[in-house]
Image (cartoon, rainbow, N blue to C red; front, side, top):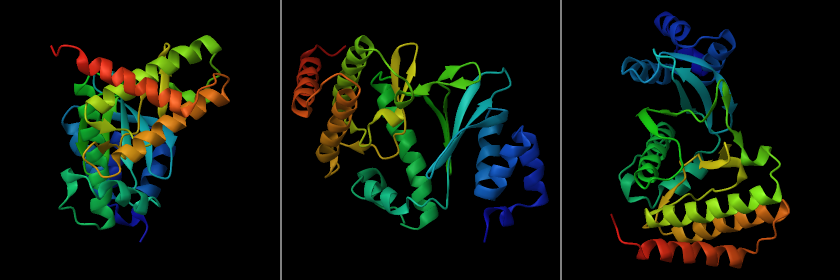
Length: 264
C-alpha cells in the first residue's frame, strides 16, 4: 500500500495548512503516511513551527524541510522515511546501543528509534558545547532542529565548497578539536565525512547523528578510526596532505590535553 492511501480528507486539510507549497505537499503524499502527518501536527501545536516552507534536501533515509514558527524564525524539520531502503544499515547501528536494547525490530519501530537516536545524540553533543544543530523536538519519525543557514539558504556542505589551503588548515584544526571533544562526551559520530559537515561563516557544524555510537558500543572504536580516516582522506585529496596516523595522533593528543584541563 502506498503512503497516500493512508491519508484521509482531514489529513489533506492539515497538509494544506501546514505545508505551504503544492510540490512539497505532493512529496508528503507520495513518501509519508498519516502517522507522520500526525507527528507534524503535534510538533506544530507545541509551537516548534507553524508552516513547512520548502524541501532543502532529499535522500534515501530522510527529507529535510525549512519551516517557520509564528515569529518567522526558521527551523529544520527532518523526516525519516518509513519505507527507507537503509533498514539493514539502521539495524546495525541500533543493535549494541544500550539505550534501545528492548526495541522491537520491525521497520516502523526501527525508524522511530533511529529518529530518537539522532535527537539523543544531538542533545549529548550540545551538552558538550559542540557545533551541531540544537534539537528542539521529536515525535515518531520527525525531528525538529535549529536551522543552519542564511536567509532562505541552508549552509553549504563541506563537499560543495572549494576552500583555500589556509581554510583547509583551519578546518582540519576544527575537526580535530570536534572529534576529541565528541569522544570525551562519550560519543562517536560513526559516519563523519565532508557530506555531513556544514560550513557557515568559516565555522564547521556537524550534522546527521542518527548512526552515532556511545563509547560503550562494541564497534565504537572501529567507527572512530573510520571517521579519522575519512577526514584525513578529505584533506589530502583537497591539497592538504594528511596521513591517517598523523591525524589520529593529533585527535588523541587533543583529547588527552582537554581531559587534563580542570573541569568547571
